[in-house]
Amino acid sequence: MSDCITTFFEAWQIEEAEPRLAKLYSSVTEAIQYDDPRTPETVNGIAAINSYLGMFSENAPGWSAKVIKTDTVAGVTRVTVAFGGVGPDGSEQVQLGQYFVEHDGDLISRMVGFVGTGE
Image (cartoon, rainbow, N blue to C red; front, side, top):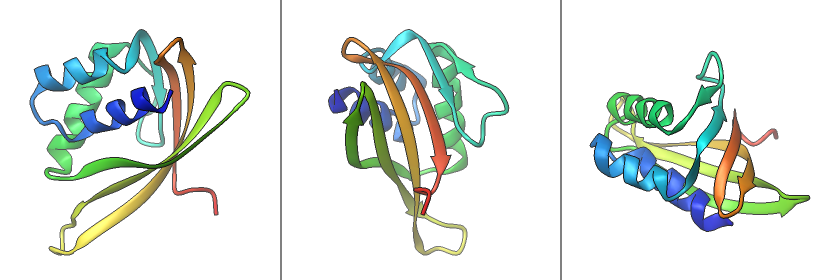
């Protein structure tokens, strides 16, 4: 299950829409639902997710999103992701986020993200 999650987060650093879309098609369902603190409402569907990730790569050029830990309980996967890159002051920065992921088969069907790890 974590392969689709890793693939999804690899898409975050792809600046071009078409290759990013290909990553998304191999990691999420058509009806994907996505929420995080930066989305005022649920992002629905692959096209909308592709646009959202395009905004990330535009606003944080060169930043990556790497899965650093996963565990699964009762069909829900908890994922810790390190977002990293050069900050406005020129130094390397890392911000952690935590996501809760539901699957439909081998693809992500719903994802809810939080800033930090709840510590």
